[in-house]
Length: 214
Image (cartoon, rainbow, N blue to C red; front, top):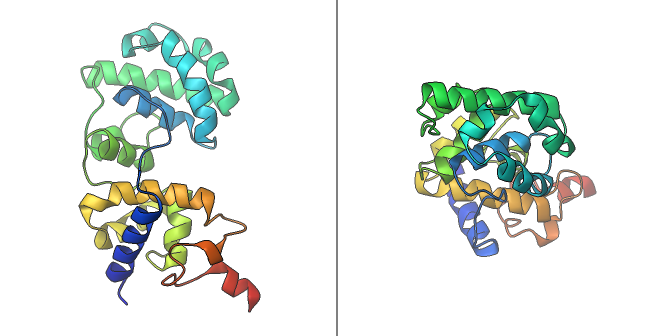
């Protein structure tokens, strides 16, 4: 079985298991998703969703963020961790969006990654969810599960992204990555994957439970 064939099986299995492939971060516009994704670094999406309503009520626009200092943002996002760095990035990001992008979130990975605190993972999420372009979000769930399935090798996010772009149909890649997050949380966890109840157990190349039993 080729990697492309296995990828198609994985796409179909995850579609059946998780028909609603949506981002777990709550947002109302591109800026909110951009900021929420920055806050999600080393923090759960659930925690971010508890924090962002107050943040976006206080600062509803790019201009509102640009009028304050990082110290004004820090108390609101404190519980997300790394709050000082994240506050600085959010402020710098908004100022750059206003100065260089006419206060609009850009629609390419190349432009998005010029923003402070924005890497390829965040950029892929934005271009996929906001602009409907093919995207591969190589977060920890994606890297772990695709490695176990035999769809990718290594743990470098950029390398895994390039490998997956070669085998995933572009129109499926974004939803596929969202479903991997759901599957990674519910079944294919990092420490104790529930392989016996996995919808991809029949074609998984490296089932962890079988390895542990041998």
